[in-house]
Length: 152
Image (cartoon, rainbow, N blue to C red; front, side, top):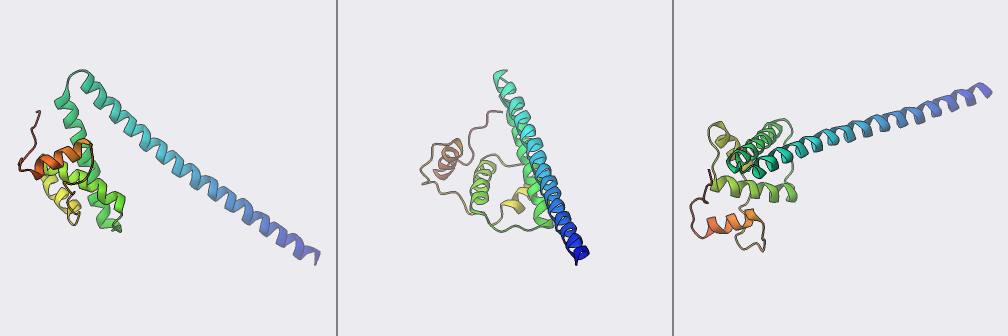
């Protein structure tokens, strides 16, 4: 009986330690991944801001469009691996991308990728009470401006 109690105690202790180690490793993995992603975003923001401060708006726009193209390409590749459920927050974000790319169409292979990713995303309402730049651009498009003025 005493041996059974010892083995049971060791088994329970092992389970608790194993669960604790697993939780710690999973937490560290998630936090480290988020830390890397946020550092990369901050680096991209710094590059864009440096270009804007040096009056290199065209290069800043090119950089941001390239970054957005990469993000859309990732979403496209992930849609084939693990199709997602429509999430209202993601739909709102993709509506903004759709407005921008309607005004400033992508070139080359990205045109098809954007078409695939944005298929099924409802258009942003031009009546949305919003003062963001994307809302202003959407209102310009709604009143008939085929494309917004391009600075480069």
